[in-house]
Amino acid sequence: MTTESTDWKSDLRQRGYRLTPQRQLVLEAVDRLEHATPDDILVEVRKTASGVNISTVYRTLELLEELGLVSHAHLGHGAPTYHLADRHHHLHLVCRDCSEVIEADVEVAAGFTGKLRETFGFETDMKHFAIFGRCAACVRKAADAADTGTTTDAGDAGTTGA
Image: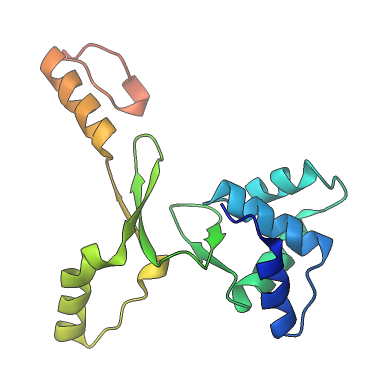
């Protein structure tokens, strides 16, 4: 978590903008929440400033992304999630069972992106990339359930297989 809002202040000032209270609150919320939707960010911001509305959050996120301070990723259906852009570029591994988001260094996909470049001449933007699957904990849970004859699907969790 970043504690120095002065970095944000100087980043914005260098680009001709001020660190307004709303911008600071949105940046702090993005920093605290890590992968958050605009609605999540609004809830966090309203803990401090109840008068902030969702359009302010969207406009602020749009500006902060244009300025390179935040980045977004699409981690499934619905709104994109935002995180600070000063972190390393990473992939998002999204568990379909528990919704956990795991950050993985983009280098783990170097073979994949290299093959896309070689085969199609395609340069991949990995910072917006999400890979869906099952996290290690959910894989273990599913294996344990298979061993005991139960299922782990959300629709019939804890039921006995027939």
